[in-house]
Length: 154
Image (tube, rainbow, N blue to C red; front, top):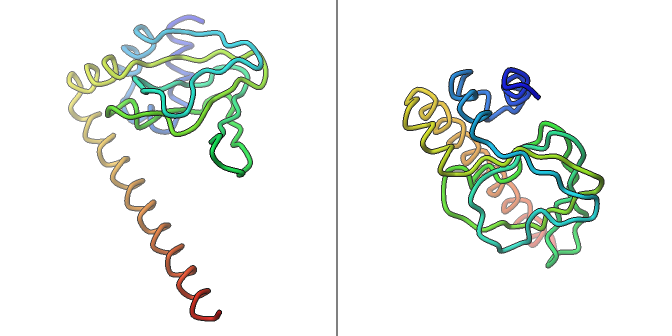
C-alpha cells in the first residue's frame, strides 16, 4: 500500500481519525506491517503491551484464557490495544489470528511522539478517552445496580 492508501485506511479507525491527516501520515510512515499466520498468536494475556495493532486484513479471536466467555472476533479496521498506545499496560486477552492476517503495529513511542507534535490531536484523544472512561463507569454502576436488585429479590 502507498502511504496515502495507509492514511485513508487509518482514517477509518475511530480513535485514530481524531489525530488528523498530518498525524496519520506520521503513523503510516512509522508503523510496522506484520503478517500473522492463521492460528498464530499475536500476543498472550498478561504480556507487556508496548503499542496498538490495527487489523488491515484478516481477523483475530480475542480470548481471556481464564474465562469461559466466548471470544471476541475483530476484523479489518479494528484497533487492538488502544490503551497501550497511551500508557504502560499488559494485554488482558490473548489474540490469535483466525486466518492469515495483516496488522499495522503502532509502537507507543511513535504514538506519543506524534501527539507531542500535535497538541490539538492530543486534546482530542484525551477527550475521547475521558468519554470512554465515563461510559465504562456508568456501565459498571448500572451492572452493580442490577446485581443489587437481584440480591434484594432473592
